[in-house]
Image (cartoon, rainbow, N blue to C red; front, side, top):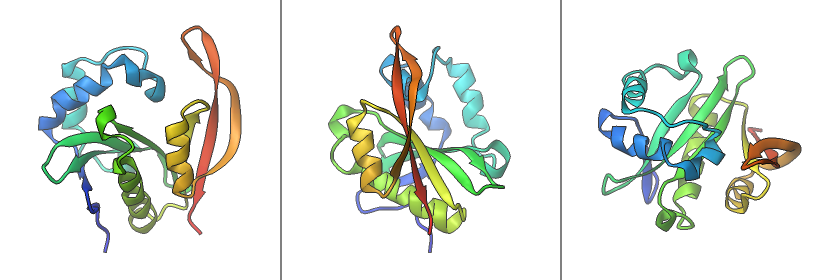
Length: 174
């Protein structure tokens, strides 16, 4: 049985009530580096996004889920992006909003649930992620879930006037 429920958190679909939560995250410049965002998003645009979030991953090539605790508080988001049905793969992105919720197993549990869902329900062959060379927390999170560092993209991202390297990690479903 496929479940998106863990011991401490669960993953759920986006709801219209998530507008302010998403607006806060998408417009916080602290997160722009990890999401490759360059400009803020209006509530109008995000409302349209939410109205279309029900569309199938096979159609929109993306699935965004909210990471919630059992008190129904939104803690973050986890995404499958660049879903490629033909090659049976997708990218993974994760964000835990509050620093006080990080390093407590929230990301680990969410990633485990998403991996299981991706391999058992979506029948994906592989997942991948792109992580900045200096993002030690994400490197540790993905490495501890079996992702392997398979490459280094040199001078990949322009950040504050300089270029930074980015690792490519991959998890293959054997």
